[in-house]
Amino acid sequence: TASSDDFKIINEYTGYLLKNIVKGISSGRVERYPVLKGDYKGCQYCPYKGLCGFDPGLKGCRYHFLPKVKEDAIREGMIEKLSKEQNNGDKVDR
Image 1 (cartoon, rainbow, N blue to C red):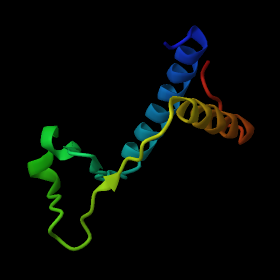
Image 2: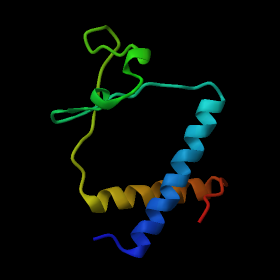
Image 3: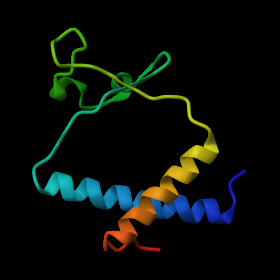
Image 4: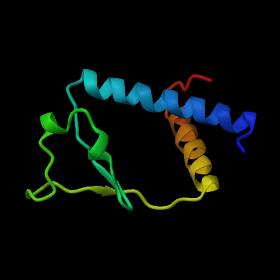
């Protein structure tokens, strides 16, 4: 069960991700990043699959595998990333 501190971290990290995604898109960086986890292929449900042209049979097209990670490791990874951003002078909204 997630605590209120966990939700605060998730909220901060989501804000951090969204900020960086918007910066990337507004600077013209739009990348495809198809994931594969077990039998789940992210492309199965993607509304842009016809537009992006991803085909694992083509050279240079590959899935990104999502490893199994424990919840504590995910939480610690978010905290570490947020701390690095704060130390680099980038404001992370709290």
